[in-house]
Image 1 (spheres, rainbow, N blue to C red):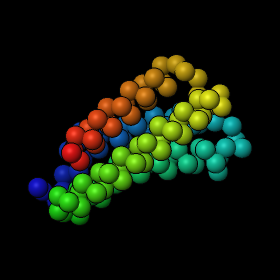
Image 2 (cartoon, rainbow, N blue to C red):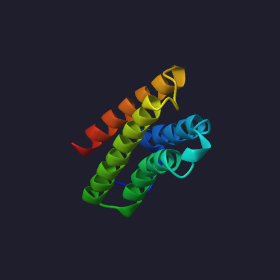
Image 3 (cartoon, helix red, strand yellow):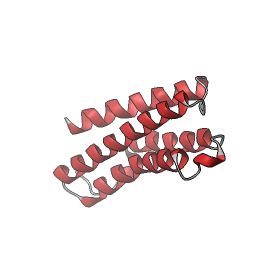
Image 4 (cartoon, rainbow, N blue to C red):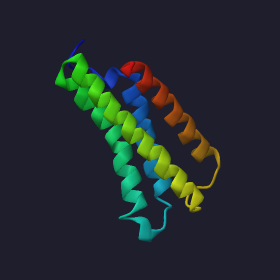
Length: 116
């Protein structure tokens, strides 16, 4: 395994797309959520590609898989926080919500297959 090339990983690329979509959706969250849910979901989203990149650069396969598991956990946080935001009425169930959901599912499947 190469110790570089995380940008070539499709899962990393899709995770970057997820981050941009999360930032876009959270722009409309209430101002009182700036340091609450908005910050939480953004940090969890950024953690996904960050952990993929860090794990890839660290070297060994065992360490890479551990970072992928951490990314998977962060992705679960994003999914949970997005659902909370939906139930609070911050995110309408529309095209963007469904698109993010499909992207989360796709990234989840990829991470799962990479750690199995």
